[in-house]
Length: 301
Image (cartoon, rainbow, N blue to C red; front, side, top):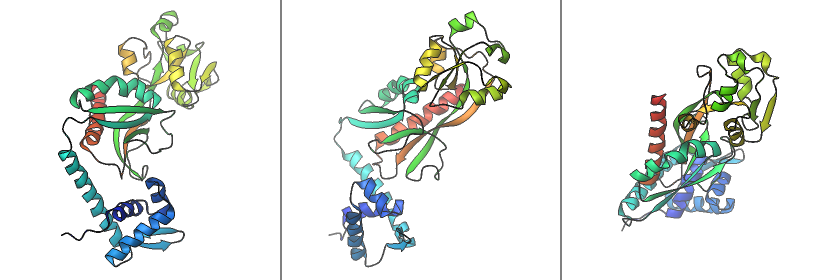
């Protein structure tokens, strides 16, 4: 028989080594600090050596512990893959996705049918957050947020770039027919619609258009871009909108971009998977699909 180390202690150890904190490990696993400490002590007793040393108020993994933790994580990945392969065929899997409201409603949900066609046994459950910078909390398999796909930006997650944003002027075709905008100065007299969740959009666009002196023009401000967008579609004023999120609205003729060459680059969207997530085939397939859809949209632009 194999002489295996205590598996629950290994699970706790992997999280504690990754976070370099008993406190963060306890929060992630839903345990007390004392429970984490006891499991680490059990594993240290089994191995016959210390895995963590105190540095100030933190318990920090030793160099050998970090190497061991990487191997444990890979072993958990292999176990997950094997269990997925041996699972009951035909069983539906639920994938929980957390995403900003505008991203979910304007980009993700209209495309989900293509993912479901390719993965008929995966059910994607989408929950929304108010902004792309909202704090990451548990309860999801994949989260979409605004930012760069760098390790320092998301220390507790694997990050994959989906696409970058470009902000440009948008308005309804009906309003354009009434008061056309052919050059930047033509926005004079129009109502500028803006959002509390995207406070710098107009300032940056006006500066890019050489109209910084018009920053005090008459405005209407809404609490969220989702509401602002509806006001733009209804012809209540002009606004700054992100591409490619609004491409479906442009194709459907609900919006137009009167000055498409004046754009402001923004940080894009990334897919985030917690390091301790079960890396199942549906999860990997969904992240790969997000990346492919984002790349396809960029190529079309």
